[in-house]
Image (tube, rainbow, N blue to C red; front, top):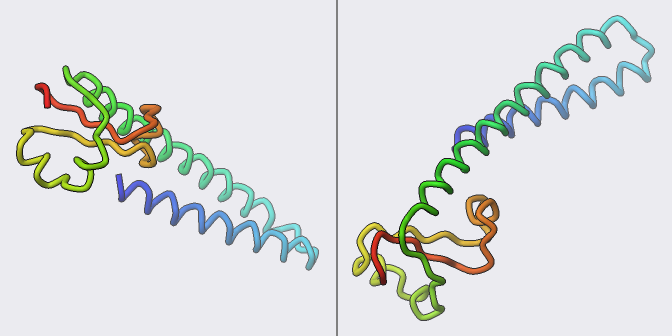
Length: 119
């Protein structure tokens, strides 16, 4: 997932550079390079969109896997403070924070733990 994010950033930076280059060409009045730039911009935008879709599918699969776990509950502030001890006592605990991409996708409002058994 980090590779996808890095690739999206790299392609977006390249797209921004092309947009700046396009403005310079328009100011100079060179119409010959515009068609090449437009074609490259279209391919970059398509690739960025494909990578974003792929990233959201990976998140969706992980969110579905976590939500299928039989038990979930909000994690208290005291438990959050000593997360290491909590994870040692509950095997297979998945903690999802609402500010992460996964947490936003799942629609969480508070830090929530998912596990196979009660904790």
